[in-house]
Image (tube, rainbow, N blue to C red; front, top):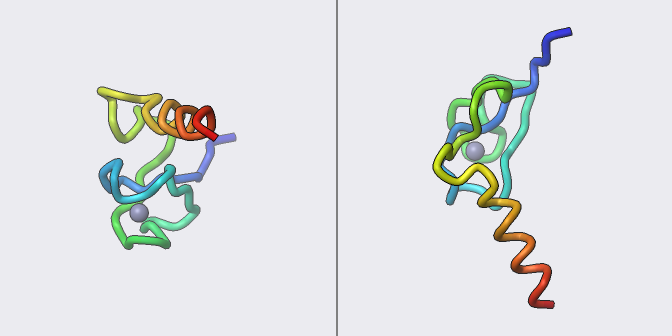
Length: 60
Ligand SMILES: [Zn+2]
């Protein structure tokens, strides 16, 4: 089964975390939502979101 889940294509700083949607546009910022199967939004730092939240979590 092919997934229809899309992810907002807006730059990394637009959202705190990837915005997933079933529609063709982001429900938050209105940017185009792309299929989530291809590469992440920021290929240079695919785990940036995870790493930042981990850092935040460790500080507490
Ligand atoms: Zn968005």
